Image (tube, rainbow, N blue to C red):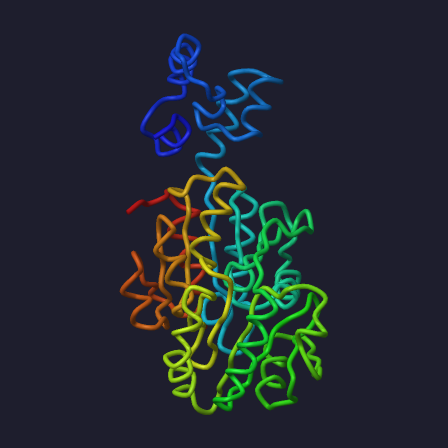
Length: 338
């Protein structure tokens, strides 16, 4: 374990950096001092351009910064898809103290950005994990920092296989939902996500680039989704990662894409240590995120298997400021660890 990680966990004082620097100077190490100590690029810049004291002050601030990963539907949203005043207030307080808040959702990025702006979620430290980790977006700098897609031949096969089971299938462009049939499912999904949809004759011909996610939907008979999942495993496993975000939604993303992997990516990207992370969710697609974060929280209204994976279960549900409960307990007060 390198100096930075040990320092962030409170295992060593800052002054140890000097003895380790001396050790590196007189060693045969081929890595740079930054790599040897595990420092980020920003920390190295401060150390070189300013002083030891400035680096210590900066790292102390980082040490006390938390990254909070919040699912939307069933977690931050009430059942009627609203942000409660209590949750808004807690998030605002956390951002003012310099903590980072990350919306982590299975929704497409275009939909998540609409919700983020409605929340006033445009400050520094505001990120979106969309498509269950398939794309990560920096709201403050307005840029995508990670994106992994599904190949078009596989997109075609998923659409065709879903049709055989009488299931609705859709994917996404940067601005809208794309599907090949005008179904009740796409209309309902469009209303929920506040995202327009377009019906096209052949989706892979229409797409200008590979999509990040496909969604197979059944509102009336979710058992069909389980049968489809089982019957198509022989060709899909290893080619695409599939999981449920609700009983009605079977997500399809690139291999190894999960909300948990996105947590690790953002920790590396922002320099926040994994030991300073908190995650909250309610559904199967949140489990990897809950297990990856230092403190994984399941909502009171969460599925049972999500609660089994969690370190903490809220006393309040998504309709009664459950997210505010988490922020007040683990972010605005003294941090707890596993």
